[in-house]
Length: 310
Image (cartoon, rainbow, N blue to C red; front, top):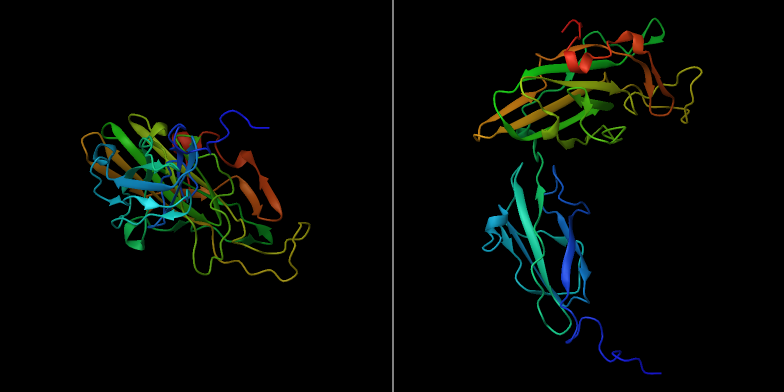
């Protein structure tokens, strides 16, 4: 049986032009905080198969017509993923726009895709002004009882209209951060487990919508995670010979604000932050968590009521 129209393969002459959609960077849509200076680009196709592509990357959407960072030129390839950025070096915090056009099987070029974006994170130690902070009153055990985990808070005031706010932070072992009492993101068990001997991952959050005019407060609760691996009587543990406690719970955070007039402000962890032992009385990656809400004012992340020693 011969079907009407079956003599033309998808993407050949006579078909609708193929186009690129759903642009992604390292599998993410418009990501922020990338630590990869040569991220991998990908897209999906509509309208047929691809015989070639061209990628443009620029410092703004307006510059895509004459890209200042990278123009791949026409590349004969059917690949739509794992295509490494090959343009000018990208500095920390750099925001870029990019788009793609593709050619179909007959050599007909489609339209340029809608622009997408990505934003670099902090790429080197020199990009951090924040310092690691911990609670001076903390010890893992006191008289055989686990010490409650520390919390930290920093009040600050806005001096104008903020157009962009990025929070870069991490913790050892885990953290949960709030800005004006609201979580900075929807992930839990941040930042995940690493070897701790060589590295620790940090996260980047867009917290622009959480800011308010006047007084603000950034709060952090900590958890042990896998950073403190000690067999505790009555608690589940899967290792017979666990590693020792690596150190006290700590955090590092850097909130970078950009105002409408172009000026910037950084609120970073330092000795001006307040701390006290909080409501989490036990925490472990494997053994669960105990929380005593009586130990801490319910509004501490909104009112800045910490009463610790420093």
